[in-house]
Amino acid sequence: MENSADEQWLWKNRHAKLVDGFTFTMPDTETNQKEFPQVKEQAPGVGFPIARAVAIMSLATACVMDVSIGPYAGKQWADENLLDWVR
Image (cartoon, rainbow, N blue to C red; front, side, top):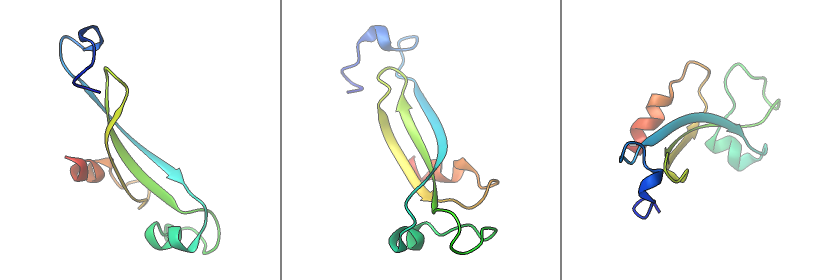
């Protein structure tokens, strides 16, 4: 998709990439809890498992080119850790 992008879609004739970090919740199942355990500050059985993700997207096509997903480890846990995984 990126290789076939129209030249008019490119930024200054370059294939620019965007990086976005975000979190999402998922159903509170045993499987999800094993892979994405709740943060220590949260009372057991309260809330949903949370994952953190970092996506690399094409500015020209808006397609996700790569993504890394890991467990949420609190507000101070940097997205740069996940970004290292997708490089």
